[in-house]
Length: 186
Figure 1 (cartoon, rainbow, N blue to C red):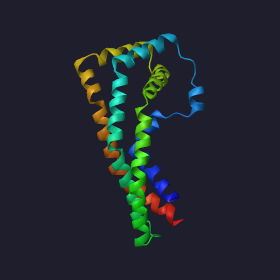
Figure 2 (figure 1 turned 90 degrees about the horizontal axis):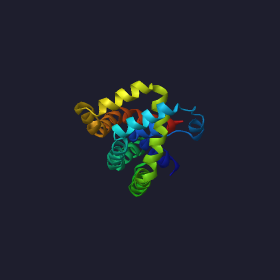
Figure 3 (figure 1 turned 90 degrees about the vertical axis):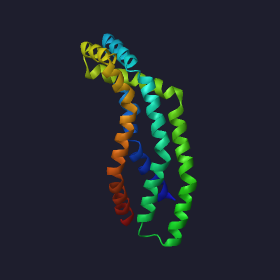
Figure 4 (figure 1 turned 45 degrees about the vertical axis):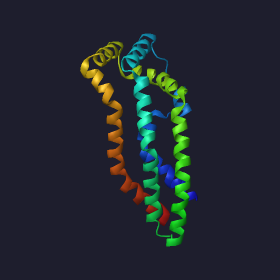
């Protein structure tokens, strides 16, 4: 069962590469240097212009919709590729997956459905943008996102992220399966 949990978590990591971008260790958050108030205000205005809240909520919605299939595919691949399992053991592990995957996917979906998550992410993004862009650049970006092509970019962003994750999964899954085989062989 431990190997199934590892496979499920590796599959979830592969299925949610955005999670790595949005997850920050508490120490990293605490170590964030103070942000110039003008830059923080410009960054907040940019995030409002980007409708960041809606973009993130839609991204979460799309990620969680495809999550169960991605987790199951990765975990099944690892179980099927495990040379140490006989047919009976493999069938038992696959049955355990059928039971475990919905629970794991539901837990992750609940996490992404927490309304406070987007608020926390918004607050965390302000210093990120403020550290990488000047006040003038933040204002230029805000102006861009108010244009028709900027608005279209924002509208398409969740779809582009989802399609990008699917492309990443297609590339990563064979590597993850090989990694699982190598780990199980040792």
